[in-house]
Image (cartoon, rainbow, N blue to C red; front, top):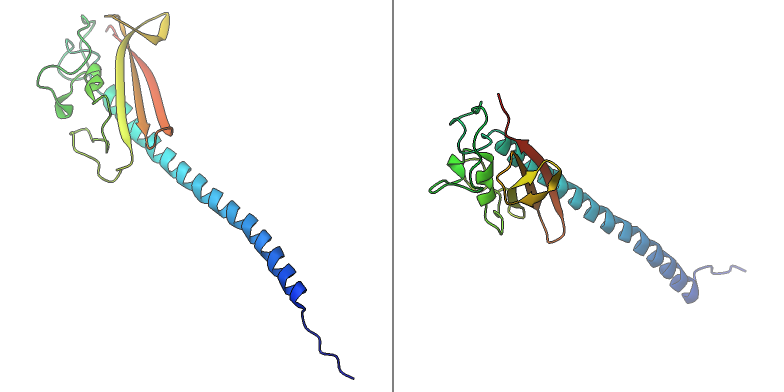
Length: 173
């Protein structure tokens, strides 16, 4: 006598249950990996944009009263922080001009000519420049002093950002 062998309804339901629990775990790992990959990608782009902006700032004279082009003149009398009347990104000539980037930041970031970098629509760039005292390089003071603290911030969400900070001195040649 030949027995028909097959699956009972209970066995089929148990198999479906085991497979669905296993797939749920696997899919949660895939979803988390995709989020981590996107974060790493954005952090990499933001770091590059921040480094580019910091290098652009570093290429400028320490102060408005320096020689017109680098290498900048010897010791200068520090002037007010911010862009001078009529200056825009294309003709910023000293490091503190970058403090004039909009308080809300540029979105998308701008290139050195002031043109929007449309390839990076989710990123916002900000720069803050202030005088600091030699004994407290993290604390802005009314100034003027011989030290300027430059903070460059690139963000791509409310909480995700990259910040670079550097201190420039009024070098004496």
